[in-house]
Image: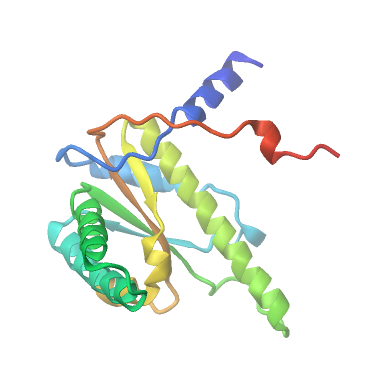
Length: 203
């Protein structure tokens, strides 16, 4: 392994999902460079289906957190989850969204993707767009780390894309896939991975 490869592997392995941040704002030019890194992810047919919403204002964070929390409470109530657990889940979600200095809502658009005459291929095309958008999200996480920032991917918008779209006034074709909270870290975390051999078949 070369020094360059060793440095890259260490960089990837040392990335963590950070959920607590200081209140320090993130320079706008940093966020622009992070997004510039995101759009260089590979994408199906090079159609670049990703779309991004950058949220920096407290008002927008609070509106989004409140709207998403209301739907979360509704869904958990329908699942007959105990009230104290619902309250904790809603409060935790609200805090994670509103306490982050910046949030990038990662969306997907199908407007430039291929359209077929059968549902099987159309569904595969949709999955390809999702995969492409997720790779852009990974670039955001790595770019954030390169600036010394912490970041965490939240899947919650995937469960309430209509709420996200309505609350943020997004174009109709922008479908939320996740959100990434970003800020200067106010915690450290250690994580491990399963042995490589448990996930690989050599043939």
